[in-house]
Amino acid sequence: MAPRDTGVIHDIGYRNYDGARLGRSYLVRSLFVQSLRGAYGLGRPARSKVMPALLLAAITFPALIIVVVTMVTGSQELPLAYTDYVPYTFYIVAVFLAAQAPQLISHDLRFRTVPLYFSRPINAADYVIAKYGALAAALFALMAMPLLVMYVGAMLTELPFWAQTRGVAKGLTGAVLFAVLLAGLGAVIASATPRRGFGVAAIIAVIMVSYTVVSAVQGISVETDHVKVATLADLFSPFNLANAVQLWIFDIEVNPLFDEVPTADGGQGLLFVAMYLACVAGSVAFLLMRYRKASAR
Amino acid sequence: MTDPLRPAQDAPLIRTAALTKKYPRVTALDQLTMTVDRGVIGLVGANGAGKSTLIKILLGLVEPTSGTAEVLGLDAATQGPDLRRLVGYMPEHECLPPDVSATEYVVHLARMSGLPPTAARERTADTLRHVGLYEERYRPIGGYSTGMRQRVKLAQALVHDPRLVFLDEPTNGLDPVGRDEMLALIRRVGADFGISVLVASHLLGELERTCDHVVIIDGGRLLRSSAIGAYTGRTEVLAVEVTDEPDGLVALLDQAGLSARRAGKLVEVRLNGHDEAYDTVRDAVARLGVGLVRLEQQRHRIEEVFTDGTP
Image (cartoon, rainbow over all chains, first blue to last red):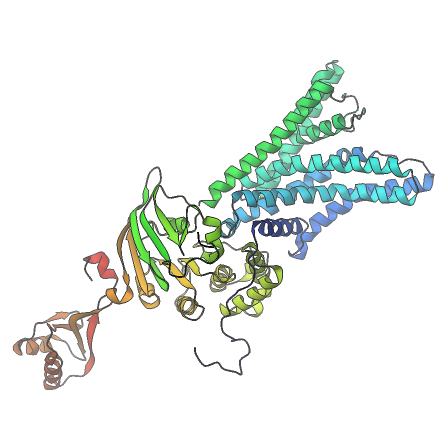
């Protein structure tokens, strides 16, 4: 061994690592946490925090107003159902998805960091689980925030405990439905393009165009008394689909996206659930295929 | 069955048997059989010779069409995840995000190799220092020079203290000074850190200076796998350089019964086993009254494998 210069602190020679090497679940968790933090700009430059913070504030602000109105009027219930909140603010969720899915997914492709992951013990499925999970969790956090604000406000104004708790539980379940479906859509589009701008534009386009087309079809169908067509049109837009599944599961009569479109009946409901599951499974399958290919390059 | 995290110490570093990888239109590796032991191993071949494919197979990321590959006693095709705990990989291309700092990024990748959070931070600080990144490690990578980026790429491959690290063209894009520093660093990784290195390059000169053992592949086939000494052994040719035109010296040496010929500015003298040739050359130079610049036995070079196949 070469003699050491005792006056130089930084050259202490190489030390081997004999400590723990944790398993795959730790790796997936680490990637999940890092990606989730990244979705809100944590651990990244200040400018990356601006967009998610603004959107979180934007989606929470109406909830604060609802709480204040309830307190001032002394009403015995909130003016808006928990399950209606996400459909009413869906454009904020869409913007968040369009901005952050490319950040979570395309970023690794664009800067070609994917090989650094796959030269480590994780495989394509681990990567997909962590990234999809992080995007879904980030979306859920965005939608859960205002619901929790409403719930805390309701508790502070001493609204009936059980009714409110049931309501917020339904709202949060609905948020999970939205988060899982939309994260899959966003991840698939983002993984298809390393270019951030394309990803943002494509996600916004798919969500907004499908929503607009479906709304137009529903408008015409309702006008011409084809309400069944109006209900089934919900199959063809991700937000409408998640909303329709939520309405059917909780047996909610009034559709917050379009009040003249009736909620699905039993058979239609199963069709919606099947479509929903097929979309999620399809997203996962696409991502697995995409990253199995990427790991071998 | 051996514990995957403690592979048999006596297993060779890398062993392949009839390793073949065919893509629809091209055969990247063709019946490659070789065994190499610990140390700094050079992997030479022209661009497209199959170096990167071989590394991907050895990482367990690409499945061979036929044949087997073992790294540290682990089967690359079936024990990929276990194997990848024990090896590091520095890709040829750019692979760093510009918007995070080197510290932040390498800590993350250390965790992705299974290091617990505290260990990941400590090892990152140590490793970045060892590769020569100091204060700048807290700044976003986007502002780094090519040399600094290459160091970060090397650091992420070393941060989990692997047994073996694959370096794919580590001197790409570096200026001569940066290249020398990177090669010195690679030597240190092999000698001081005790980590075996497989360094792929198409630059033979670099590998001559850096490696203990060189594997040469060409068109996916093994051309040769030998210790560096076997490539760079002495030849039976003495190179003489003098301060004057060498023709006079050639004539004198011919008279003295030596086989000498002019090669550019040099005179090449065949030794054929008799060392008195040195004395003859010295006397001839003295008689001509010119200055003697160089008198040395020539060495083989790895290049000769490609030019005439027999170094």
